[in-house]
Image (cartoon, rainbow, N blue to C red; front, side):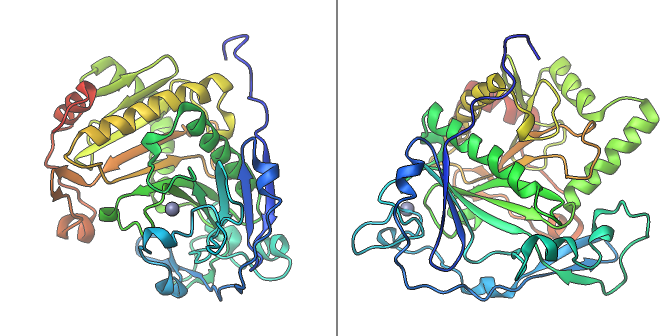
Length: 388
Ligand SMILES: [Zn+2]
């Protein structure tokens, strides 16, 4: 860290309330305390949520089975948006008449809080040690199943229904980042949680069921398949080369230069050499850190500029705002935190105006991606900030 850069920014203002059905909602920002003064007046009861995770013995990964989600809200009309602030006669998920950033437990979660004494129940979940893969007890059984304990949260980026993340000011983006950091720390501390994933799906094409600008956070009771694979590759590379794979990938992209999109003082954005998606960008802090909680104030500050710039470049690609998926890859709780590199992966499934890249036979059936856009060309288009 550069001397004088400051370790962490001042703690963000936040205030927590309990919704009518018992879920937690947390307001972030200067107005948090005031917003928390409004009670939830809706006559709603807790959704009977049930979830389990089953082990796929062939792929060696856990699958979440959560049937109650079939009933969730699907693209309600704009005047019924549950993520808008509440108004007289129109009560939403957010009881206050105004907010800056709000985070609440998903009413239709894929992963559920255990009944009763939550922390104790999660810690005592059978096979919890097996899921982390560090118990040395071998893989779970062929028909292994356990409760889908964890937590799913919704992050409202802005009270403005028609906005998108790219429309946020630097300070609004910084508040969202503060909320991600706060929740990453809080959820990782829950017993039984192995990994926290903050992400955003944007656009109907991605399957978004609410158009209000929002993201989600999943706190999984296992290391996700994607991350488990990266951890294995990382360990092999360390064993064979004695070096950190993330460091070498970033250095090689910087050295090559042809796929760099943005090179800032503290962050670097590039299209990966073997991009899976038509337009895909990976954003790394130059200083390797395991997760969001380790970012300095200066890194947080510059992230907002770089990320907003990236999203705006994505929106210039096509005739309409790009549908995208954006997610933070963070070190799992029990992984080698010294080896993992926090980074964000952003990609669109659109390859041209009106044309979507579908996960068809090869991708869905075999996990073998075929990308129609040459990564160097995608990087050049994004670098220039042009349309496809
Ligand atoms: Zn809305």
